[in-house]
Length: 230
Image 1: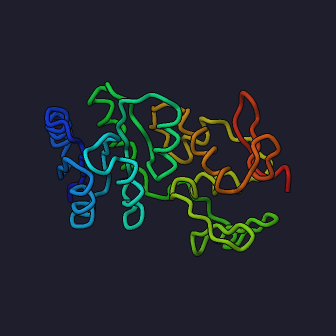
Image 2: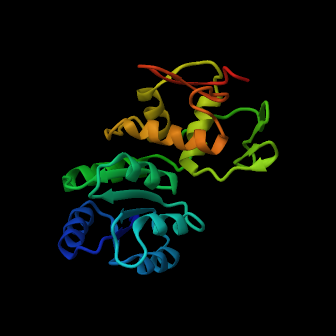
């Protein structure tokens, strides 16, 4: 069966252009012009992936993504006309998997979509003990849950997968390219800055001070490792 994609974009020309490119790739396309319509269609059509514009009439893309994450595990590729750091951070923090800054090539968008859909939702999860304990941090693989001092953390699937890769080998340094390959897939060709944004979001939820981290340690110029401060 054809994969279903929901395109949420209020600019008619861009929405039709993306529909044309993606339909030629064999996808089933559903269109929405505003946030409320997008959420309604996401519930009824159960898309595999949502192409979501940040700037929408009514509720914006960030709020759409936030609400979408309460009932859908669809991939979210956020489109933004703003290249500022804060927009990227907030967009990924509310559950988007990746972002693309306008203007962009429709062919690049198609390639990003295909790369996302080629990997299962939790492709980076690393098999291991069902329950891992690192100080006050508990990772319950059977329940797909992370607890901090007994309190459940609201991680996105991508954040959970990224953490799973890091904790699979405490103390080992993972380069950005290795994390991209393990979490996003070896055919991902977007900006590797996406790693830093998701790490920042993870640290915030873990209560990790970047200056004196307990869980996720930056190895400057290389990547990240887990667990030095435990």
